[in-house]
Length: 150
Image (cartoon, rainbow, N blue to C red; front, top):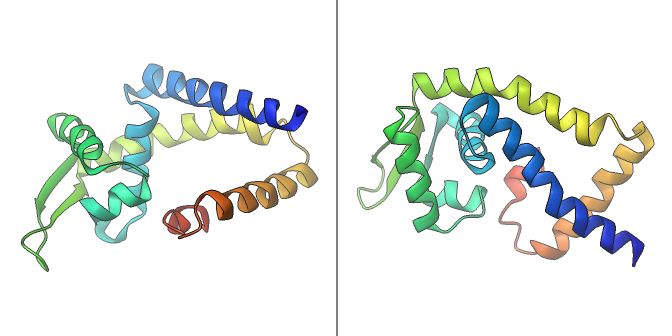
């Protein structure tokens, strides 16, 4: 019971900590940052919207709304997929690449402060094993495998 209650508390509190830092320092939500991060790691900083939705665990309508906001800010652009005209690609623009590079150090610092640096090296290894086991259970089809296998 103790482990579950503590995990539930972390799941409730940590997103707010991450979101607050990103909103304050970069005017991005945590989810917007996550979308930019997934694009930044993709070949040519481009993904089909369906693949981006899968990697960010979002519905297409939610992702489309978020990408529209990022487009309005000039940090993401959408265009027809050259391989399949029925599909749409999202690409990080030069301004988006600059934004993610400027934002990443503060985000990493926040993650280190609240997660990594409060654990011993042994606990970090344990955390990786524990979260891996949980992910295998909650994502049996491996939809987020490209994200969590990095």
